[in-house]
Image 1 (spheres, rainbow, N blue to C red):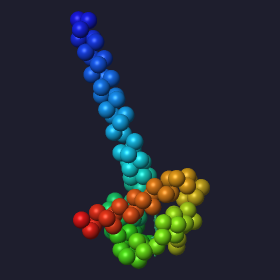
Image 2: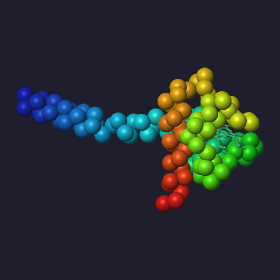
Image 3: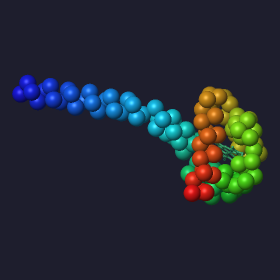
Length: 115
Ligand code: HEC
């Protein structure tokens, strides 16, 4: 009885420690991913292609296209903050760090396509 109890605690401790070591990078990624999916994917598409009904209507460009990727991080961040054409600006709703994470996330789409 007592032994199972201790074993249980050790297992819990090991699991907690392992996840604490693995989480930080995964968490940063999924925070941006979550944000993107909740606020941006309805227009820009889960894959960044802009291939959604709202995306087609508003004429968004494929994030993986050279026209989008040739812009600097600062330019992309500026568009997310201030908006562009039919896209609302997010500077009031998102922190600067979150906007930067979204820019990184948008760059990932282009990398995935090249693979
Ligand atoms: C209502 C639909 C809509 C939503 C929601 C939306 N966008 Fe946009 N987005 C647009 C449109 C329209 C453009 C301008 C496309 C163009 O240049 O013609 C744009 C442009 C951009 C650009 C510049 C790329 C380019 O085409 O030069 C970035 C970066 C961007 N959006 C990121 C985001 C992010 C990040 C979110 C979520 C926080 C978001 N968008 C949410 C419609 C939307």
